[in-house]
Length: 294
Image 1 (cartoon, helix red, strand yellow):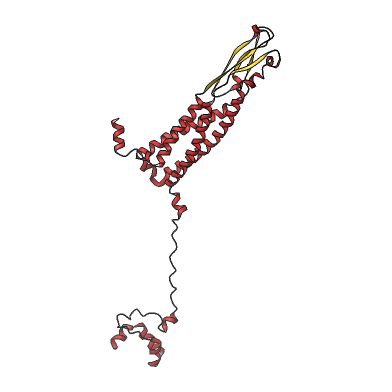
Image 2 (image 1 turned 180 degrees about the vertical axis):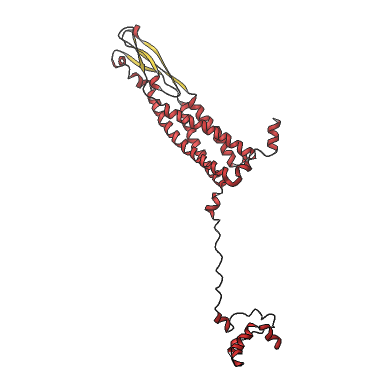
């Protein structure tokens, strides 16, 4: 207890209070409920076959079945109503594939949820490093959500078939002695399948939990930033440099204007006034010398 209290004091389990860890803890719990209610099930039903000759009757035929519901391997003995002999009869159907698939998904979900909780509590920073941990977690969570949906649907159909295969009235129809009018066949005790109905409910609850957990894991992946708009708009285009001709006629600001008291020489005009374009061009190349002469 001291170690647990120390870890709580250090904030190791604060992630459980957040949706990411809280839903993962619920997944762990409901996975246990799902595979335990299905994998630990055993049931039975009773029938009675009353023959015309009471000495040949059997009023307490008990049939037991259990997970993984290979009903074709379940048998019982019933009277033939033609002497003291009895025949052996087998139930119909094999529904082990859907039941075992459901339980397998539950067990692996339990193990993964437990491992994920340990990572959240003890190495959360490493889990979030470079977003690799959340991305892997997201993919695995999506796979488990899909597998829970498939396995729950398959087990719901399998359970319906199990109920049909263990219905005493239908089983009595397979006994030849019950087809004769002088004999009386009836069910005594129906199988209790409430635990199996609960397992199907837990299966679909797990579907909701794993689908809901996808959103919170997705927010840890960093993909939301890409979808939400980390796009940086391009800068406004700078105005294109003006042509030499525009600068020649004084439309472009002179860089020497500030240092020369605001004087902006018109080099083209000066050139013509001095009697030649070359002289004006030389003054344009040497503005400092021109100001000194002034």
